[in-house]
Amino acid sequence: METLQDINQRIEQWIQVIALKVEQMQQDFYVETKRNELDLVTNIDKEVQADFTKLINEYYPEHQLMGEEKSNTEVDMYKGYAWAIDPIDGTTNLVKQGKDYCLILSLFYNGEPLLAYTYDFYQKKLYKAMKDEGVTINDQPLQLKKYQHLKDALISIDPKHTSSNLLKALISKAHGFRFIGAGGIGALRTITGDFGASIDVGANLWDMSAQILYAKELGLVVTDIEGKEIDLNHVKGTIIAHPEIHAEIIEIIKQYGVK
Ligand code: IPD
Ligand code: CA
Ligand code: CA
Image 1 (cartoon, protein in one colour):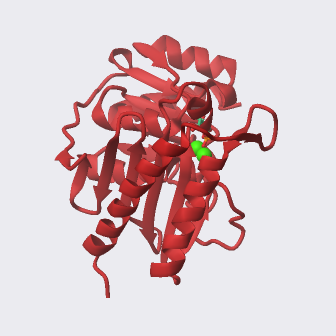
Image 2 (cartoon, rainbow, N blue to C red):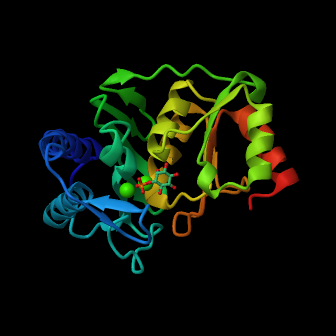
Image 3 (cartoon, rainbow, N blue to C red):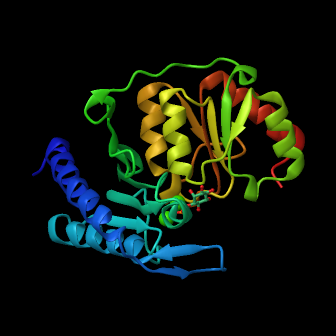
């Protein structure tokens, strides 16, 4: 029986290989569209997910897998071991800027988060959380600087899915607003304390899975967009925030509504 450390070692090795592979593929890749012409996917997204699926099938065939580039109708994240993967979060950034895109990967057991990873390809930084072991960046313990007031903090929001009234209210009450175009990177800025909160109204589980363990390990708060506990099987939007700021944001959302 493998321990969590063994699983972690295997995953870290896999991420190292994938980091090199993506760096090479970035020289020459192709782009397709999904639901509409702004919804992009590349052969890199597909290959990273296919590669991870191969790894799971080979070493952990009894584990479930929820991924952006596959159908997930059969997956129940509350049953046994289950992974969530966004092979490339920020695909548009990869295509247009070659930076600010990441891999997001997490492991749950009966719905409890055990492992969480975000690999920022451009910065070559691996953010990792293990249950009860804290969060590291390239193996160095993360030191979080915490905010207590929205008025002092930068916040990140995806404006595409947010009503203009809510957006205006949030921006006017925060110190400032940033939109990176990759929810996974916005969350990283929040767990380091660069931002006080990261809000993604359109997020699915694969966009935000790592945030759940990061928040738990660092004493941050992660909920759905109405402030309720995340339902892993039906994620519709997420907020990760420093605790006092989370409360302030939920009050504003209650007042203005999401849509
Ligand atoms: C998207 C990015 C974006 C967020 C969207 C996501 P993708 O992920 O994280 O910032 O606002 O909700 O779908 O499509 O690049 O994996
Ligand atoms: Ca993606
Ligand atoms: Ca994503």
